[in-house]
Image 1 (tube, rainbow, N blue to C red):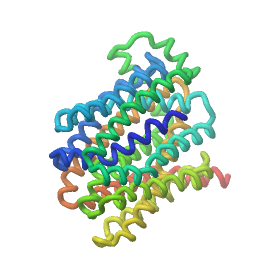
Image 2: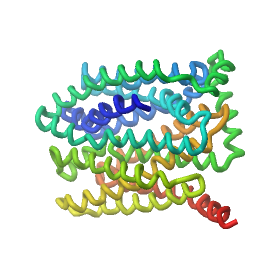
Image 3: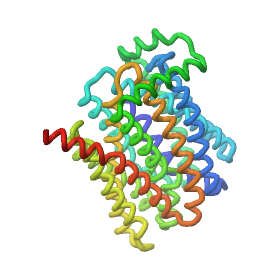
Image 4: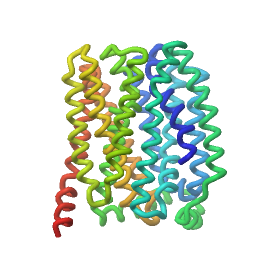
Length: 398
């Protein structure tokens, strides 16, 4: 966890400006959407085989190998060339992040209590969001150096820091007890082992309604994360090209989003527990939808109202993200951990690909659909949560 800022800060900087950087190099909005689709298609493939890879190599070794392949190497490719084909190769390699993430999450939450799982996932998200608070620094750099030179600087720093943190982290962390046990029993890797891992996981899910709901919420949350947050390659173009924000003001949108998210994670999320977590998801989902409505209805040129809407969306997202991660972490246990996370990533990728194909059409009709579709996804999360909120109240009353 201590090494995470050395990965997340450079990643946040270069990703926030990557789409504008590539557009400056001649790529169109449709090509940017295609790059996002390639990323999720790659993620789908690697999500499918993530479980047996993590079980065969172990959590620790998988984390090192696939972190370098999915993080540092894509940045190096983008440094060498920024035309469409190299960019597509780089974004395809980022799909290997699903294998790395499966190992990383298991190292965080495996063989620990519900409270520690919730705290770990919230801390992970806090560190992730803190990187976004520094976005105005990136804005100042881009304003002084220009988008091309500024983004190249971010990519160089990313290659150096991402490689360094991966190597240092590998030296200090240890394999989990469950990881050692599973690794010892998975000495062969085959297509049959992939199918067998999913058969066992699906059978486990069939008998666990809460885990199935947690998996669905987590998958939908990732689609929203991929589509309507600062990580989306359409987020910055929306505010730059459609809302006409520039310079530090444009960078401040990312920082304000991060501050609002961080407030939720530091002030609101510590009060969540297993009994109340679905209620928090319900309320934060409604707050998010109010923010989306404000962004869509905000008159052109009204920056104050637009920023207020971003704050609401960020507050809602801060609770939703940690709650979705914690729900899956708390409901996942035993030898099916890698299979559950891999299946979640497979579902994330399939839904993201469908959402991106849809937004590719809708965005050309109106850029506001970026947040309209995000609102629909959050509404689906709320719908899944409602029965659990009711059952939680009944259990409390009893």
